[in-house]
Image (tube, rainbow, N blue to C red; front, side, top):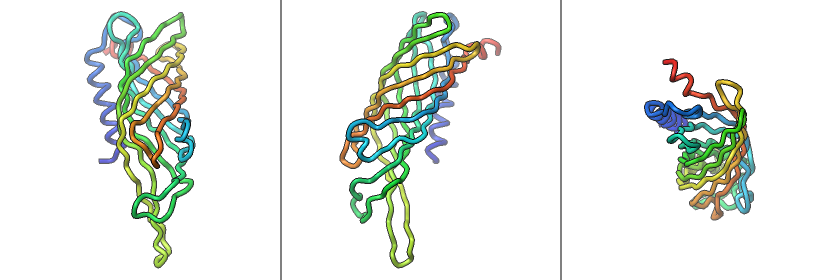
Amino acid sequence: MNLKRIVSFTLLTLVASISLHAQTNRPDKLYSMSGIGFSFPMGETSDYLKPKFSTSLGVNLGLGKGGLFLYPKVSLHAFKFNELNPDAGYNYALQNGRSTTYLLNVALGYRKIVDKWAFYGFAGAGGGFILTPRATVNPGSMQVIMDNKTIGTAIAEGGGGIEYNIGGANLFVEASYMYGFSKIQNRAFNTVPISIGIKPNLSKLLSKL
């Protein structure tokens, strides 16, 4: 099955399940989240990755009566990939390729609301896949054959953000630090995703159903 379909199905399942258990006694009990931005490789990760356009999808589920919330999020980051050394069986190091991530992080967060503003932080862990391109050259047919290497990894992520309420939704800016426990090109994977986007308040919508 296509990875994008798996991600979409997983997210829809989470939203459906979470909506059934939504609290009814707090204004921020259930949000969906959609963000766009860039993920900036840090340290030795920048030796082989450069930032490109990225997206993220998730939900915020309020827990209890305070500011705690559960935050499952799918990160679909894109990078320019410069291979340092060819994989075994490959003779060429690919340059200016495209690498993508399909990573799910489940975090616990805390939100503080002040008038129309909200401030939040979160920390969690998860995992997923990082796709890196490879190339085989056939001199006889004058063809370059491309394929992807799929690297599974566990991740840890922590960060925070600022929100501004515009009625039925919040605009937000979010930054985090993401660390991958599998190496790529014999180097660590760690990056700083920064995104802006919108969080529609599904609580109000569900209360009208």
